[in-house]
Each structure stands twice: as structure tokens, then as C-alpha cells.
Image 1 (cartoon, rainbow, N blue to C red):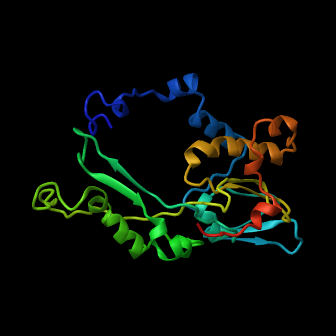
Image 2 (cartoon, helix red, strand yellow; image 1 turned 90 degrees about the vertical axis):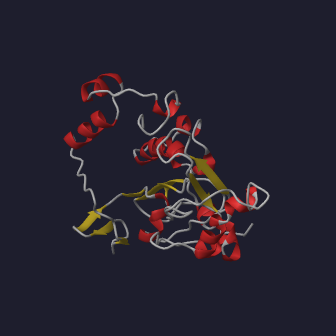
Image 3 (cartoon, rainbow, N blue to C red; image 1 turned 60 degrees about the vertical axis):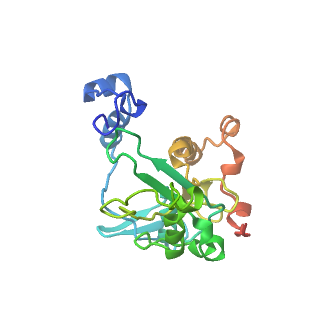
Length: 255
């Protein structure tokens, strides 16, 4: 980051800490990970959960993975948008928008723009994207809309001939990709016990704001699972985030 951004940019103002300093000063992931592993956490990396099945006893679950099946009494879905691929519930989009993030002067790839959004430009204002869990393909309608964002907002050119200058030798679009986001009809995350299901919990659908919301939602979920869903918890955790029959039965009503 220091090499990529210009001198004085706040993004490049940081210092490095040794593992010992991190443990002593911040008590963060390194310490927490070591503690969890020492208490029996079985960490399976690069092992996707391909499906979830309720067992015949109606109280336990089986998680299928490429490394074998896992039987459990309690299961937590914390995969945000990707959870639909494993267990069918409702993740819907509410509003569409465009955003542009420029690479600052003096940085690596100076002048590049990251542009995203355009969901509502797809068929049925993006409703066709509801439930899509394949992020290996790009919606051509959304792609075309985003590619035309600059001339749409800033005009076809900067001079009298409608010319903003020569295109980059590699073309106007250097890379294009898509991804899955978790949305709900009412615009709030889903946190808590799934109604009508034994041992089934979730903390997901953060409406694109998981970096802010997921930490305390995860803490709340643990409190609930350990039987501490009390007045103290209700004093600060938004009831609008709690999973319930009414919320899970809502349907997308359009825009």
C-alpha cells in the first residue's frame, strides 16, 4: 500500500507489528485463533458445504462436504449471500445504484475507476437476479449499463469533438466480475434461531454492510445459543434483526 499510494495519503499511513506485539497490544485474531484451536476447534479450510439436510429424527443435521459428511445438533449459517446455495430461503435485492471509486493520483494504476451497481437495469428491475448463486457469469444487461456509466453521467467527451482522450492500450475495461450479496425484503440482517427448525441458527444477509454489522451480530448469536437471550441483550440488539416467522414469510414486493 505504501508503494501503491502517494506520500501523505492516509491509506498508506500504517505501521507493522510483530506477532508478539499483536498479542500483547491487540489480543486479536492470532490469539483468538490459537485459543479456539487449543479448545478443540476443527478448522477445515477450502472445504465448501455443498448441502444441508435435516435428519429423520427432526433434531439433527447433516452437512455434506467434499471431505465427507458432518453430523451435528446445531448448525449456523453465516455465509451471507452464498447461503442460498446450501439452504433455500429468501435473499432479495431492494435498491440498485452505481458507485465509482477512483485510484488516486500517484497510486498504482492511477486514474483507474472501479464502477459497480446497476442491478435495477436488469429485467424486472433486477428481480431476475433473486436467488442466483452462480457468480461465474455476468448479467449482460447490467454489464452494458455499467460500461456506459461514464458517458451517461459525464457526457460523451471533454472537448468540442466529444473526445475524452485516447483509450488505454488494454481497452476501456481492464477486468469485469460479479459477486453474490445477501439481501432481505425488509432490508435488515437475519440473526437468531430459524423458526420451525431445531438447532438451526443464522447470522447473514447484511445488505452489503457485513464489515460493519457481522461482528456484533455474531456475538449476539452466541448469546442466544448459550441461553442468554435476556433483557440485557434486548437492551442493545435491534429487534428488527431478529429472525422470525413474519420476516421469513415476507415476499419481495418490487420497487
